[in-house]
Amino acid sequence: MLKSQIRKQILQARQDLDAKEFAFFSFKIFEQFKRIDLSAIHTMHLFLPIQEKREVNTWLIVKWLQEENSHIRLVVPRFMGSFTELAHIELLADVAILLNKWGIPEPVSGELITPSEIDLCLVPLLGIDRRGYRLGYGGGFYDRFLATCRPDIRTIGLSLFEPLAELIEIDKFDIPLQTCIFPWGINYYPESGR
Image (cartoon, rainbow, N blue to C red; front, side, top):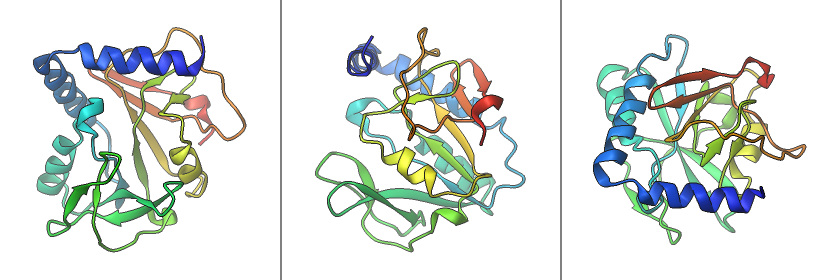
């Protein structure tokens, strides 16, 4: 099946979740995330959820980290210029978050953080296969971003649904994730090479 067809199916499956199911799945992913060892993490990058696309509610993770792991510096993406590149902004209490013209929540301003400072990245995805390759929205933003990070960065995807039955077609720019959190558990992909 083509990536475009899989994207369409998953986006529809997200929309088909009722509000209670979606909230429950997001909460269970948050509960699983709390099992991750963060003892060596100083700076963590995470995405803010696009509500209309039913992305995992990462605000639960943000709030918990700010309350229970305040030593971890949180960083969120902001699209630059022509919507081809991500900037990375520290998420502080006084940083204003607004929806950009594509409906993506992002900081209006704030301190820029370089990719080399990031220890762990929570990566948005639509689906993931059993090798750890993710299916995103097709823009390649996160693959380009992760390619600029340190080789030892930890990468974790968050998925509402079980791994894809068939392998995703990949190209030389695709970077597999090391870990994916699902509502019912955590999968590790040691063969990811990162």
